[in-house]
Amino acid sequence: MKTTSKILKTINILFLILTLIFLIVQWNQIPMQIPTHYDLYGTMDNYGQKNSLIGFFIIVLVIHLLLKGIQWIVKLAINSSDTKKSFKQYISFIAESFIFVSNFSFSMLIYHMATSQTSLFGSLLAH
Image 1 (cartoon, rainbow, N blue to C red):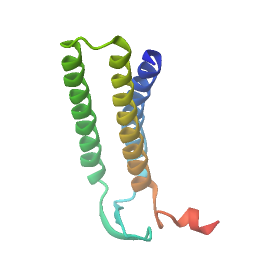
Image 2 (image 1 turned 180 degrees about the vertical axis):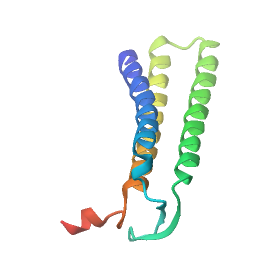
Image 3 (image 1 turned 60 degrees about the vertical axis):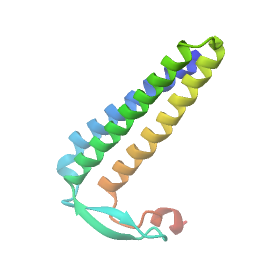
């Protein structure tokens, strides 16, 4: 499980880096107005400036750092007790998995916001 946690940690960092690279490389192709909200049916009902993607990425980065901080605090608490090594590895794995889901979700949302011109579920409903 320790190896899996290290792999997840690496993937988490890669998601952040790739999302930032995507924004930098595609910035000129991203429309000035992007979808920022969808209704219950997946139809865009609010738009914003593409600059909001920068703010959104910063929020993703802050959430990542906060989750890493929580993970660090939990590890400190576990290290100060007589907890078995396997439990420490389990907690680390759970934390990295949670961070992975968060990073993946936000990265995909940023990508979709930057490239979408239609409904969130439009391509799914078309099939």
